Length: 303
Image (cartoon, rainbow, N blue to C red; front, side, top):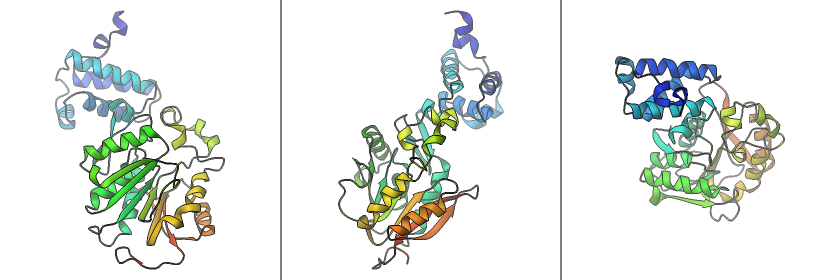
């Protein structure tokens, strides 16, 4: 291998120099937040913590660490997501395995978890939760983590995603209370649920190519493409939700920017009344909570 292609020769020997080298490469590749990614990847492929990286830039990296770091930076230059390179992503304080088979959990989706918990008056109640399009299982597992007696079902059309979600449930000791099944939204499901949650695909199909390469190229199209107007999944969910909501149960969905009026209208046409809209940290409407227009009441859920 020519010296310039040898990752050990390419990556400098000290922490500070390696970070500067990585930042330069990532910026040249057009990677946003190059400095952040350089630090996160260095932590992810070595045993160094954040404090050590900052306090001791002169410390040496052994050849194996330099090789791993050079490989990680090379992959990030192609715009492969950091989470895919490291194989994990933190969500709601839970470290979750990720893969190209699923959408990478994002901080915006924690707004959905917060909104769902806000609809529960007794977190120790034996509630039933359904997570449609579960992906990594992030939303369902976050809710079960906060509600120790709740049980949940996560569905996904991807068998690979379902297998991944099961591993994440086992990783956090939630396997006994979390079930997962391959299903297309509500197809084949029986019973009712106190909470139905979903982060469905909501990007208009024609807009996907214009997204950052990290998303457009490396994340599964099925988890992004919401049809011509981005609203197909909400129509599918609205059609069947009433038959699976327990009395006073709540349906909560993540939405894209500017979609609140359209999704509210879709839900209303299906007999669902929007009871809350939650904004994310950027102030963008991110979650719609809806319930049946006529409710019978449930002592564990607020009216």
